[in-house]
Amino acid sequence: MNLPVIAVEFLDAFRGLFVKANPKVWWRDPTDPKTLMLPMIHVNGFTYESEHTAAIKYFATRIGKAMSYPEFSPEDIECFHNIRDVSGTSHMYCVSFRLPWKVAMYDELYEHD
Image 1 (cartoon, one colour):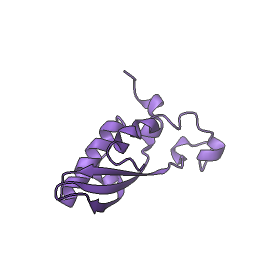
Image 2 (tube, helix red, strand yellow):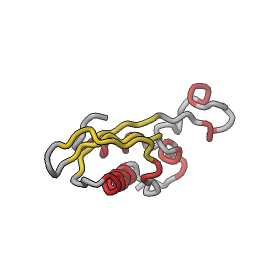
Image 3 (tube, one colour):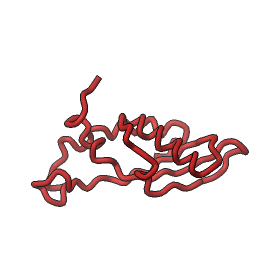
């Protein structure tokens, strides 16, 4: 997702995306929904955090909020790298993570507003 200013906010589109997925296509074992093969998501974004640990925590919080999945943490991020420093105070990163199962199956696990 290469809209670095607002890409994270579009992650809500993944909530419940696999609720009605065809098990023959998306599950390694069609009888076991926990074997769902979930996509890797790559999202670009900006932060004012210059220190790596603070920046990854910032993105983990934003991603969790966007997907209505507060359990999302820096440990869920598989790849995190600086793309470029836009200015002395603005830094662009790419964040890569596997779509969490609870987000993919959102409709079955959470109540909606």
